[in-house]
Length: 131
Image (cartoon, rainbow, N blue to C red; front, top):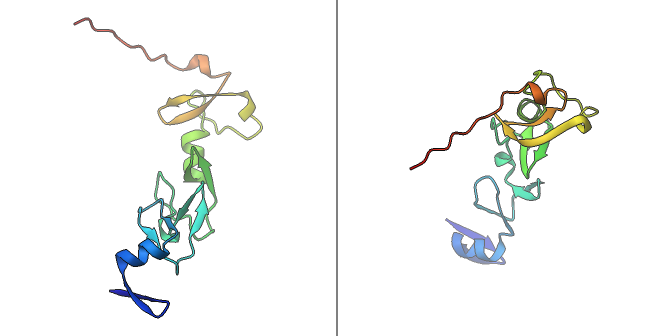
């Protein structure tokens, strides 16, 4: 397959080297000049590859809200389940309650923990083995 540009025929490799501006964060393939990329989360994507990192829900059409966490896109339901559900009381943490939460390393995929619930969580014990 050849690409026509500037009245010249280009092989794919040379065309990409000369005209592709970015690489898709989803498939790591070049974004060709005729594609309107999605710019989100500090990256560029083919519209069909801009999906929730957890459930693969398509986000590129603008019909589904997404939330960025650590540079990755999540659909709102996955974000709430993974990051905004307190592992202690299992309640959804509202925006106003976020300031009263501890952002800690993930506990079973959860980042935010209500301070009132932190003491009710089981502690993870580690065992040291001497060799």
